[in-house]
Image (cartoon, rainbow, N blue to C red):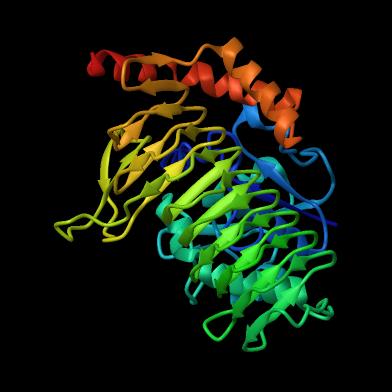
Length: 401
């Protein structure tokens, strides 16, 4: 028996903060599914995490003392048909690498697995897609939607749509209990996957590749351009392009969202819009938590990245390459700063740290409205992030004064 483990207990995961503060890298959503969900379907078995200690209560580790062998996959690797074929037959005692990057290793003993120098190198000759930085999520999203569409729909029958809808192309899959009337679905540019219980309201226009998660809601008159993932339980409205919502987040009103990634439990107030390109057409820099400095992404279009449970008020204006930390609350009439630390209250009148008790109260009120409660394990993770980010938060407040 072989256990499959996604590994990210390493410093490279910090490049993906704040998104990876509250989850392993393998729990990031790229395409319709999280990376871990893909590997579970591929291997038809549970896939475990070897991640930061404070995350392991929620994101389970394998039994390290088991007699099984361990196939350990780098947590930020996206699956492909070619890679799957190699991993299925990777011999025990070997390390799969692409140039200087290790992809996976197969070991009989967990302890031996950490002595990579003792493993036999196997060079991977094909292209490998790696989620190294936050922008890679939307850059790789279109290809992963196609991959997930094939993975999820193989051998399955799509439900039907009523005659009030217009469908262009053939790559449309409708789950059970989906509601959609008077909408257009253009799959000539890529597949569209609508999962169980989703609602697509009147006048919405979708152009693939697009993935709409379970019980998500696309509000009336929404325009979804290619390369959009709306995660389970999320609400979306307005104009959206090249964007991933992890799940249970809301941008329910008019406004533009592009080249963006939102974590879980986020909310963008009505009329909020983000910029994804600079007026000088230069490549966009993005705040990198690992280096505490701005990093040139090499991309000319980069929008918003928002950690879990961050929110902004109505008519918020988010600048190009904007990073908003976990739990941040924004109510500001000017352009929001390019970087806002975790658990910060930022208004026109003050900048202060979010009081933890008030944050818990907010989550309780949110549960009443949304019905998606943060359990005790999640609260412990958020508390750990709160503690870890306090110094950076306080430094930001000093600079604002």
